[in-house]
Image (cartoon, rainbow, N blue to C red; front, side, top):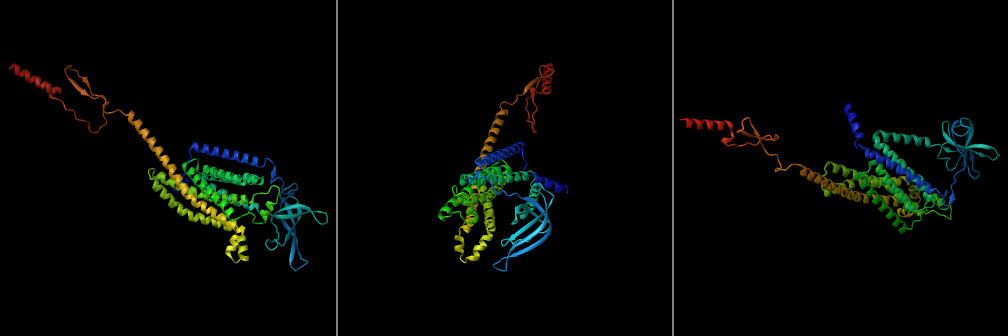
Length: 477
């Protein structure tokens, strides 16, 4: 059990952050919030959307919970035997508003568009209600739709909990970057497009902000983040250029459905650029995929470099291309399947009415979906070599700087160490007898095999005394 806890703790602290990293995270967050606030204020400074004042639906709605169904009646069409409308009358309890907690009588109206797709309300359902005059001039409560945000909030809470449990502090930074990305889209990009600013420049600016902010918060201000950002920016740039050329070559207008038509005619004096909306949608969709690919390659090459800092640049580049080829197939499939899934009902509709596939692909609504998938996939393919080259180049520069620094340290160390000629010399120490001298070193050497000192017989005291005694004996004889 202790070993498992140790592994879990190691997983959570696989990339420890220093104090400088934490400071940079805080600074990045503060700067991102300041930029978002400034962008939002700049977008709504005129208080207009496409030249018109900001308004919206003035009808006031409240939340309510159905407690009892009173009746349900069908109204048949006068031209056929089919049901044209169904009215369900039920009691409900207000969950918001000034009369919160009071009981009201609500009427749910279902027409032919929703009659076969949605069941009547039942006790326990949460709905939005509003007041309106009926045909008799009386104020009556009506239901405008089911409340679906509560379940979405539950799923979002589960997602946040899972990210925090498995991500630790990096999970916190991931959620923070996700929140800032959503704010960049909904608080800056959409208001600026609606206010009539240049869609192309706005979309590019928001994408660059998202790339820098996300990589800085998730991975920190490191070489791999810079390399991944360069690769992601390169892939998005390619996707944007392909979109511009394709829109010109295929004579696209951006008018693909009723929603785009309504958007075009909101204000005819300040029409919105629908082709610019298509461009923004494509590069925003490409940012997420290219950022994923760029970070995967940069992170993998970083681990290889950390394990072997002396790895050759060519070997590191070859490894990057190998990793990129494995990622390329899955990410391209992910992007294509995501776009097909989002427009599946439209594809089914046109495939039902047209037998010719080429005709279906020539319909602008389908063409836009296919263009999004192809432009994003090409951007992913270009992200692989750009990220690989950027990572190898940045680590090549880092390795040169590291070797230069080590060489300077080694040179300074050699200058401070004593040379052989400057070694401390042996000094002669006087003994009790003035005529006897011995040589002793001032400093004891640390060598395990000390050098042997050769001396002549005159330098050894007892040999010199013995020679003097023999000389005196010979003189006395």
